[in-house]
Amino acid sequence: MGSLDPQVIEDLGKGVIQLLSDGTVLRSNNIDFDYPLDKNDGSVLIKDCQYDEKHQLHLRMYKTPSIITSSRKLPIVVFIHGGGFCVGSRAWPSSHNCCMRLATGLNALVVALDYRLAPEHRLPAAMEDAFSAMKWLQDQALSEKVVDDEWFHDVEFDRVFVLGDSSGGNIAHHLAVRLGGGGGFEELAPVRVRGYVLLAPFFGGVARTKSEAGPSEEHLTLGILDSFWRLSLPIGVTRDHPYANPFGPKSPSLEAVSLDPMLVVAGEKELLKDRAKDYARKLKDMGKNIHYVEFEGKEHGFFNNKPSSKAGNEFLQIVGNFMSENSA
Image (cartoon, rainbow, N blue to C red; front, top):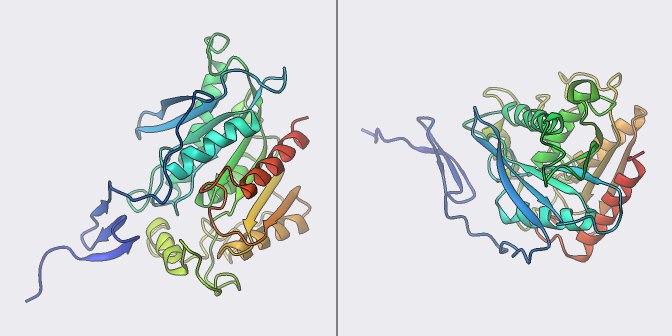
């Protein structure tokens, strides 16, 4: 007779996350990162706080101690981390380091949120949590204490930009569709989203793209991407589900959906490149205000893994220009 003990049916990243046959999820608490957590020399203020009591979800805020380059109040950048909907947090070096860089490079208040992870919480849990974080931001704007709050007295709640990395880019897309044009002002006033930055958005589909069929990246393979989808999508659906494929056979048409400006960025050597490029092209063909930028020779994570690199600085400049163009 075979063993009655639960068997590992999905192993992602050599034990980073394992799904057992009885539904148990095992997560490693000892992940070996290839890069250290950047030390804060005091140039950035950092604060953690809870934004969702029911689900015990937290976010981390970053800002410079004072407005450095302008007398104008700070914009807000809502950062949504990647990780295939299954791993990651605001505290991971890949999130923390790039948020430090975003705060100083863009002179903005950066709000980095955690969200519920799959497979314990399959989609659309992550999308719902992103909207909850926006409602939390609205609560802060409406608070009577906002004038005296050191974190919010010098920010512009009507100048918010959402920056989603990888699966965070997918979440940003769904948030943009949910809020529609006008920055969701009717639902979130006085908060208003001015634009979205989708950095290597994690989209999928049953039919393979040319870039997916190409060689694996240093830290990412097609097998890992498929595992993320198996663990995060509702059980029994395919990668053409609307959560994965915005242009799948059963996905609602975006033709009539009003969308705020978008900047889509991908690396030339990314497995996800073709999906990001196709996403931007199709929306542009619909008349949406969308711009696509491709970084030559770069793979997935080129910014969040090395935010102070030459490419990272170039990315920051592009994002800064995008924010300036859409702040009026």
